[in-house]
Length: 155
Image (cartoon, rainbow, N blue to C red):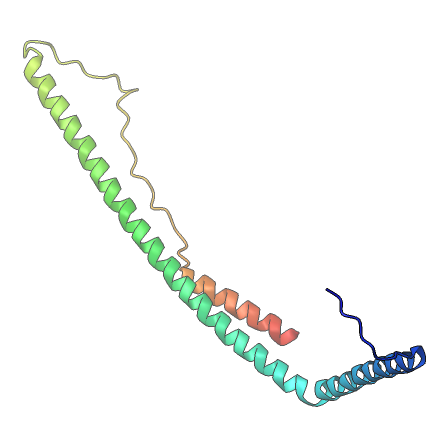
């Protein structure tokens, strides 16, 4: 509930007090601007350079950490892929051997041997080895870090 005061309030005195307070706020903001300007001219540049240097160090550590983790993940994926491939090849070879043995046992020995026409009996050429350019994740991360460093130097 609002409590009424018994003090006499003069509008003229209130207006002067409000004007004085707003003037003080204006002067305080001008002072803050001047202090900020002086700080920017004298101390901001070294502080900014220090911040950029620290940021570059953190970025390079992060890139190295991420690069190492990605490299580890790629290595694990390659190991899993090779193991899966060997397992599938062994399973298919075993199934083909079993099918061939079963066919030899079930089919009568008296059936004549049929040779395939030469069209179907092509000699398979060995596949040429594929040249792969192996670029490690670490090398890519280093390249990105160097590019970022050049960009920050230009700025």
